[in-house]
Amino acid sequence: MHYHGSCHCGQIAFDVDGEIDSLLKCNCSICSKKGYLHWFVPKSRLTALKGEDTASVYTFHTGKIRHLFCPTCGCAPLGLGEHNGVAMAAINARCLDDVDLSAIPRGPFDGRSR
Image (tube, rainbow, N blue to C red; front, side, top):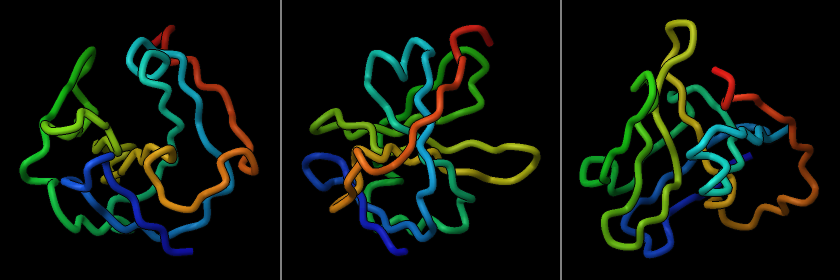
């Protein structure tokens, strides 16, 4: 499947390919406060259309994930990092167009204890 995602104002926009078989609901301080629903994909499946180079970046704790957010609307559509040496994108599924989030299973992740 092919999906389009963006921040609220469209200043950050991207396309991503893959099947959303589940979403991750993390309980760490940033994810729980912002309501993220993560879909992790290899960064090679992500095509930045605009804004990746002008996005504001927030890192915390280990600094391994670069949380990108729009300097205009404040929306945080994705994060970038790596897992086991593979560049990954943590897509905020709430920022994808035309996706029925209620139809996708969610699994918990205990980020608070890490």
